[in-house]
Image (cartoon, rainbow, N blue to C red; front, side, top):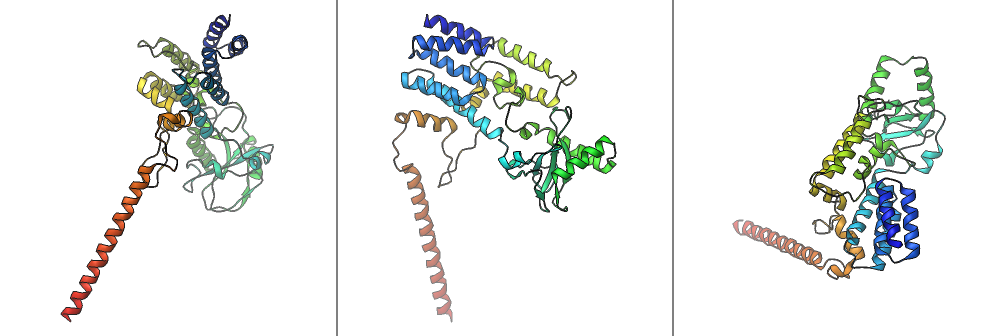
Length: 359
């Protein structure tokens, strides 16, 4: 009966009836709590739902039940990688910024390069009520009515500023912009600058979303971008992937109502990665994540190695005090620097003695 419930859950997950799939899995695990296949399926279900912390918990339970389960290491790596992608992309609005929202204003969005069209710098965002002084570039994100830009998420903006400006608050600027737009009283220069900022930020539209639910095409999980299950088979014909790509492309085609050029491109990029087995594997393992730099300047562990070492330390060399090779390399480099310094001092003394002899 537990196996029957598991098969039922797999069917429900494939049809995206996640609630029914979860109920079937809970029934299966109630009958047989140590059912490894059901625990694995539960982890996959949480991944498809985008709840990666719960997915990690399911795979950790599976690990405790059977450390030799053939796919548990891979799924742990994938779940941790997706959680890291989500944390790094979907920033949570700072409490002080969230509390400062007004009827017309959301926040001050800081940009780099002393240009309002520069790259967003989310850690420097400020509350609508904060005074923005000279030296800060960016724009006030205002409350918008309706969709804007190619993405549909381009912000309504005000006070688009470089670093040279007088003090102001976004609460006042957004209120004034709202009145100006209602009366169509924007100057040509202000309207042009607002358009340029909106266009520049449009490609970073997902970065402006904070907390709550996000459209699937904005999600860092490429499987979710295409609306496809996390374990779809890498068949040569790629029928399942092809159908998912076609469905999403038609849904967000720029020529259709509710379409988005940015979403359409994002969907195409996701399809390109998941279609190629090597690129899909690299995405699943977080091969694109920057690696830490060791003391000797060499690259540290990959995302995959970090996760595997956490759960399977027996597969790695025992290093109670760090990497001994790193210490040896650093000691060798230090010794070479000392020898070079002594050589230079000896040359300097020799040159000084020669000079004295000539005199």
